Length: 433
Image 1 (cartoon, helix red, strand yellow):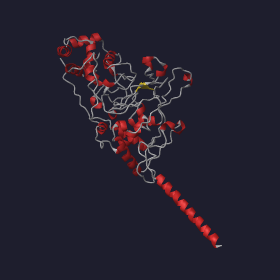
Image 2 (cartoon, rainbow, N blue to C red):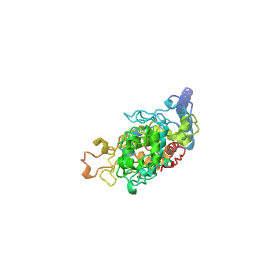
Image 3 (cartoon, rainbow, N blue to C red):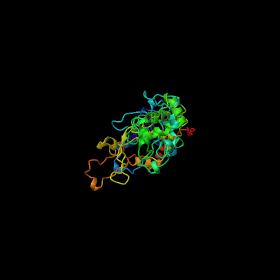
Image 4 (cartoon, one colour):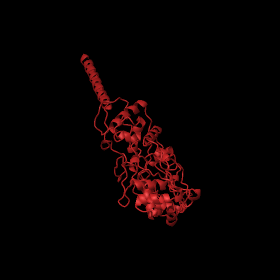
C-alpha cells in the first residue's frame, strides 16, 4: 500500500515538473523577438508586440494575399505601448543607409527603385543652360501676352505657392473654359521622361509648344507669337542676350521656357530629405510608421518610387469613366493600343500636400485617395452594352485591398506630408516693353 502511494506521488511530481518545463519553454519562446531582417533579437514583452504590426517579418499577413471579398476586414488597432515599441525598431532600421532598409513589398515584375533625394535636372545638349536663357524663360513664363487672348500665362496654371499647380480640380483654358484634366505640377518636370497625364510630350520643349498652340489652352500660332514678341524692344534685347541675335521663333521661346522649368527642382528642405541627410529625429513617430507602410503593406512603392516618387509609367487605377460623362481614355489617345485604355502617368508625390485636388480628374482629396487605394482601386463593371467591347479597360493587378485601419492611414498621411518642402515665392519679373 505504501509503495503504491509513493509511486502515485512520484508520478504527480514528475507530471508537475514536465508541465512546468513545458510552460517555461513556451514562455521563453513567446518572449523571443526578431529584428527587421528576421534574426533573433532581444527578449520582448509577452504581449506579442512585434510580429503583428507590419509583416515580412513585421506583419503576419502580406496584403497581396487578401481576397477581394475580405476587403472590409481591417487590421486591428493595437495599444499605444505596442506602437511605441514598434516605432523604436522602425526608427533604428530606417536610420541606416537606404540600401540597408527593410525589404519592400513589391509585386512580381516590379523593379526596386529606392526612395531618395532629388538631384538637379540635367540640360540637353541641344538646349544647354545659360543664365541669360533662364532669365528670358522666367520672363516668358509670366507673360500673358504669349496667349491668344493676351491674358493667360504659364504662371496662370503653375503657381509656385501651390506646389507649381493651380489648386483647381481641372485646369482653366482659353476663354476661362474648364479643361478635361487636372493641372500637373511642374516640380521636377526636368527629370521626367514623358509629360502630360498621357505622356504625349517627351521633352519640356515639346510640352511648351503643345500648350501654346492648343486651341483649348493658350491658343496662339508661331506666326502670331513671333510678330507679337518681335515688336517689343525689351524682348529683342533679351533674345539677343540669350541666343546671340534678336530673332524670335517658337523654338527659341520653347527652349527658354524649358530652361526655366528645368530649374524648378525639389530642394532638400522637406522633413524626409533632412531625415535622409542624417537628422533622424526629423520624422515623427507617425511618419516613420507611414514610411514603412508606404514601402510594404500599402504597396505604394510599386508605382511611387525613386527620388520623385514616380516610376514614370502608365497605370490604370479604374478612373477612366468608360462610356460615361467624364470618359478619358488616357494613354490610349496617344498610342492607340487597346491595353493603354484608361492608363495615366504615375504622378510624382513631392510636395503632394500642396497640390490637391488629385488624380487626372481632380475629384479626390488626400483621404479620398488613400481610401480608394485601401479598397484595391476602382474596379468598375461594364454595362451590358460594353461587356464585349475590346477596349473595355481592366484595373491594374498591382492594386489589391490593403486592409489599413484608421491609424495606418494617419501614419501614411504623416509620411506623405513629410515630403512637403519650404514654401517658395516665385515673383514675376518686370515684363519688357
